[in-house]
Image 1 (cartoon, rainbow, N blue to C red):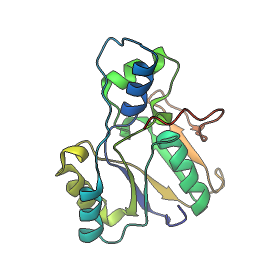
Image 2: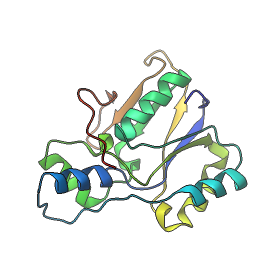
Image 3: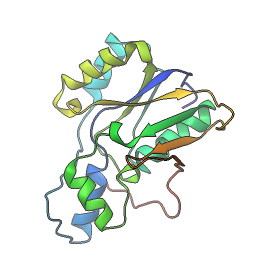
Length: 183
């Protein structure tokens, strides 16, 4: 996680929260209005192609335990950088966006069984996204934010969240009891 650099792009390989909401709803016998499905998938071939074709990847992370928000916090803290997530840039399926609030959950903290976070120089982001999107498991890959150095309003290790409705808030790690392992 300490490999992120100022100006690095943060790409998520697809939609977030699918696996965590699916496992929870099945485990608890919940019937959600729309069908949600796990995103569990083997990602080794896609990751290998990224490494071989892009090369200059500073960090790869699996956002399963604690979700996207927790992993970005870990990377920001280990790299002593800041990132600001805009809600509109984060790919979330409509079914997950609708199901999570009903259960009092945030999809950014839900497990992702078949996704990864890729941090690399911004100049290589478009090529990395094209590579990911050439695979079915990466068809929803998206650039979600950039890492920056702290300024007068931020401190090293912070993740900021900017919702559609405006404003900004600090986004921390998943607090309390970790959810049980799903796999």
